[in-house]
Length: 224
Ligand SMILES: CC(C)(COP(=O)(O)OP(=O)(O)OC[C@H]1O[C@@H](n2cnc3c(N)ncnc32)[C@H](O)[C@@H]1OP(=O)(O)O)[C@@H](O)C(=O)NCCC(=O)NCCS
Image (cartoon, rainbow, N blue to C red):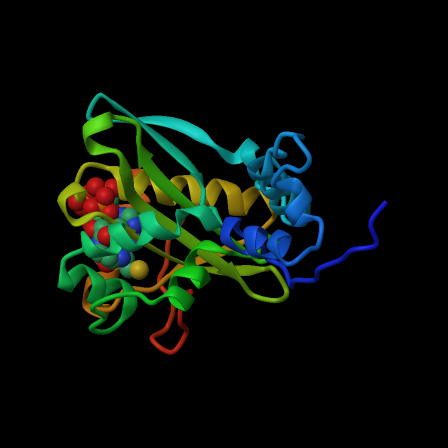
């Protein structure tokens, strides 16, 4: 037995778990010693991450888009790089509509805010293509609940070259089903251009069959 400990605040992701383990004295032994093979450290990191914040795998769902398989799944801390890449593939106007301003790039803390979410209060689903030549993130939808968990604000974005194919509607439908299953009565969206909102609400309603409305200008959706 080795008296050893290292502390870190949740949530953990793979780099943080790696760094946490590296701070222990036992880390040297895990790398292999006196002819003993190294431990499977990636497995240890995975266990640490899952124990601290279990990933809701049961929410994964496969769907089809233009005849290609697309996975809708909860976002994970490991998605940070893919999220950065996704952001670079949004046209400036789409970024403006989503983030209410001109944002050229996302830094690490913003990306952490997008990918390391607290599933007790927030939910975020991404759409990932399973075709090899188009692998990567195609879209994202997220919602943050009010503290009383009666109302959630949502925001979504679809990669600019993938817009208009039904992915935004699929993501939104997935989100609304999930929020409803948690008893949320009101799900509200925010768009940058208010004059588009009524038409957008009508459109979402006709596509998804959910009752729709739009919030006042002062209420903001999820900021990250
Ligand atoms: C809004 C957006 C997510 C819709 O995704 P999409 O894949 O292009 O939408 P779909 O092909 O599923 O079409 C859904 C329909 O609902 C409308 N809609 C409006 N707002 C929507 C939203 N937030 N989510 C989904 N659909 C939306 C679409 O315009 C479309 O209307 P139509 O059927 O009359 O053409 C996408 O255009 C986008 O990323 N825009 C830039 C960012 C943005 O404006 N986000 C919303 C504010 S947070």
